[in-house]
Image (cartoon, rainbow, N blue to C red; front, top):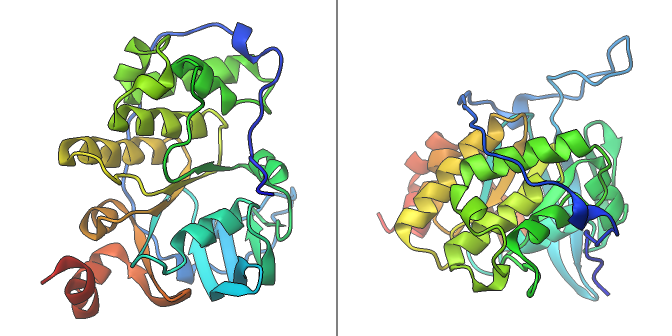
Length: 285
């Protein structure tokens, strides 16, 4: 059975709505593979040079069917890292594995200096990883506001929850207008905004997004892509799977190309866009 990394606590639906604020963003590019493992500082904290997420030799699959083969991947702090590849390349399986919903069969992964290999989905959420799944998976018959609150199910910092409501409504103002509306009646783009907002409400250090723009109009997809820059400015990293390769590499700092469950290419996103193998296979150029 797949474990769902959210639940409904008794007191969440009594909390107060708040007004919107705004956020700024900056865009510095880093090389994840250049970030080595640093020892803890004197106070026990981890060095900012160490990747937030470090995956080494990761293998996983479903029963006897192996999907991932020796994946190595880094996500530095406060960056956007994109993963692209054809259907069946293993992108969603990788994200599900990092969320604790698919079992690791070999290899390991560390997050913020902690080995989370084999940890449960709920434990991984509490450590600071939030997953926006493919298909949005909002809860029908619950309002937009209540769907957002579900992302904060494990939190008890009421001022922080209210602050994060502020932020979600600032980047997605339409959600504030629709806050009492049944989430299942939203448009596709609005549902994706709500799903991303729910992920933000967990206050993660890493926001994992599976298929940001799937089935959405170009203008909506562009607005969602721009929102990721504002999310990054809030000291969150983003690990993004995206079907639109050009958009993925334009907004991200670093990219990985998966092919048959293996990393076939990786590098700074703008450099990957110039590689003939990427342009031929994914851009039709």
